[in-house]
Amino acid sequence: MNNIKPRWFLRNLQSTIRILPVSVLTGARQTGKTTLAKSIEPARAYFTLDEMETLNQSERNPDSLLESRPVILDEVQRTPQLLLAVKRAVDERRQPGDFILTGSANLLLMGRVADTLAGRAIYLELPPFCPTEWRERKGALTPLDRLFAADFDWREWPDEPGNWQGWLLRGGYPPALQIDSTADRCLWFAAYIQTYLERDLRQLSAISSLPDFQRVMALAAQRTGKLLNQADLARDAALSHPTTHRYLNLLETGCLVSLIRPLMTNPSLALVKTPKLLWTDCGLAASLAGIKAETDLAHRLDTGFWLEQTLFQSLQTWRSLEPHRRKLHFWRDRAGHEVDFVLEQDGRLVAMEIKSTSQVTGNDVSGIRAFQDSLKSKTSLIRGVVLNAGKARPLDAGAVALPWGWMVPKT
Image 1 (spheres, rainbow, N blue to C red):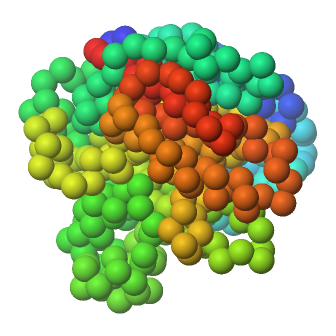
Image 2 (cartoon, rainbow, N blue to C red):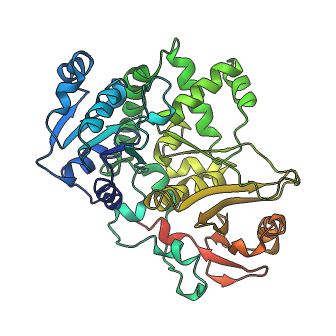
């Protein structure tokens, strides 16, 4: 890249190399893992398994790649047995920060991984850029942290014009974000999908029919922000349920989709246990769904789900910066009451509804009320929030209406 953008995630990696001998940095291809790893220590030895000679060496004599410490081993999912060599090297001489491993797949979800390096490694997942990170706004996600504060003041919430449709199309991959032309960006996403199908996917698993897999990708993109009904998806894809399930697992392993789990507040209630499907990059999801321009959204009935997908770009960044303290859930009961996102930090909860309109009514907090009623410990819910296109103002039931514009600032 001509203009390397700083990543907020850098502090995570800096912290882990001071503590454990192995840091495993995963994420979808083109999120900037290699650039981030190299920025830690420019003189650190570097080997990528994308190079055929290095790949062959990792298979024939993996220990030889580990002699130069500290070292970065890039795209390690191509030779999962390399982790056994790393384990041996750590056990022979344990030194914090010796190994940074990167991979375009979640190694913990890969069936072929020989060892998880338990007690030796920490696993980190780098998400794509969120809009405010790309705009280099330091501390831009602080308002989300303030939602958990006892002295939160809705009048201090940032209010600025937003353009979520534009950020939906741009996504968060650095190469796509650097392209100004909509047509050129569409070509980039098409090439990304083709590369994933023809190279990255084949490294993860043997797929007999790439058209079938691409059809599942497109159908899954049309279901973004919705409950994942695998039987329904399998029927529309004209595939068996086991095959569809396997393909979805591969998308999750490749860090392309994120399955948000429901928060189980009370075992005695009839709660939905099905996960919600979201894509880690909204631009890729939009491309797969055939959304090429902002005008394409005008004729769709599911624009609310696409707004949710776009704002998820920021929420997943917020979660990734403190992965051991923060979690993202949603909540829904079988009566139809739901909360789009439940943010959790240190056991405390914020219920978040997302609306594309500027008008917030009592019905918009009905899900938050039902969620609060379902909690065994009422004090765990700090507040309810309705993110909308209007202005900040207090609501009933301990909830506030807040604008989402700052999360998708106009470019």
